[in-house]
Length: 399
Image (cartoon, rainbow, N blue to C red; front, side, top):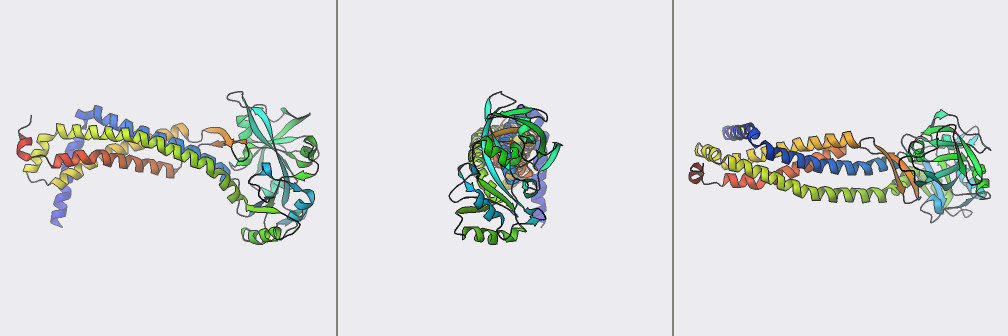
């Protein structure tokens, strides 16, 4: 026990002396801190894009809600259901009901072009036709301005994300879709979900505008509970009158977010890894400079009985502290620059824009600190080993 206490006191003494000498090496130390901060800021910033997009997609789903598509369809764009099929789905066991009927909404999904606010270039925006129960099926949807559209009229309500990203979607404005003008009568939020990127109207009106007859592409249903999903799914998939695919909304949207989030995460890690290589060399340079400047000091300590292990650990601690400062600085910069930054990107499953906000989460900040820690340990290891191996007699003669 006494030996351990002595060893720890040696580490503390050497580390204290090293930190006190940092002002004499402030140029090299600052370059290391800035280099590591850059790595962490880029890593966290890029990954916050993936986190924000995934959050927007997964916020759209609920475990007690289901989406029904035609069998074999991986998105609403390539699905198709008849009116009779949507009625069979609405009447299936497990669907929640009110006095007005089942909480089921047969829906139509089309793409329109609208100019982006930031660039003025046209982008694909989803226009969704819904039924009366849509707001009850998606209980996170709330009207934030104006009013709901009236069934049977060419009126639309707009998600707050779409209104923020695209021009001409304020309450009171009018958009032209096909041969008709559609007044915007309300804005709605959806807890940050993908529905905020959409424009909604009456499904029957949209069918007429696009000559879709009495066809739909999907059915969204609210279930009595999450545990009723299997019974609901089995009833539909075993019905010979139907040929459908049934998914929980949460799983459907999570699957649709996977491709883009994987791509962004991979690119972010690759970019950060390349930058990390440079940051490691910066840390090596700093710590080698520290060892060179303190050669006689380290040799004197060794001559006084300080062990090699204490020298190695103290230099690693110094490198680690510099790295943690850089990691904290980089994380703070990423949070200030990226968190809640609003943008939109293409959802390749539906070929439409999804508006979302970057999310710098605690998990991403922890990941950035871990990267900084690894860079600091790698950058400090070789200089620490060199310092411990310095011949005492030769080192004491150095100027």
